[in-house]
Image (cartoon, rainbow, N blue to C red; front, top):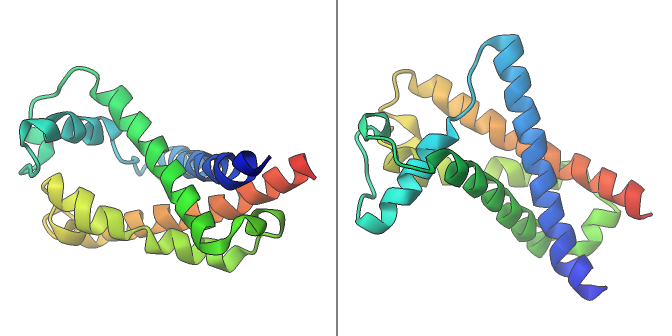
Length: 165
């Protein structure tokens, strides 16, 4: 039971939050016409990392690679899973049985550091999307997505609590 509580539940929390983020992306695209991040680009970057290609200018000019979509989507969910485990590492596993909204939202907002300072620069968009065609829009979309991820942590915990309680 300890493995379930200490690893599987936090991993499920991260995967569930990532699913909420993806539902947000679908709604954002259909209602507002704003496309989500193209995870093929993340996959392309990851495939080319072991070949020494860390920085791209921009990655959209780098030729596509086989399997990039699958790798990008898998990475997206693995990162969400890791963020879920990290969040519960900070909050403690008991948070899942008595979730509170604000720690989850704050954690989601904090995770925007990853795209601002790792992914966007490596994909050629600069730090915090400074080289993107519309930097402030890109920043806002990333911040909103990561805040939604935090909301997803909370909502997923409510689901886990209702199913396991």
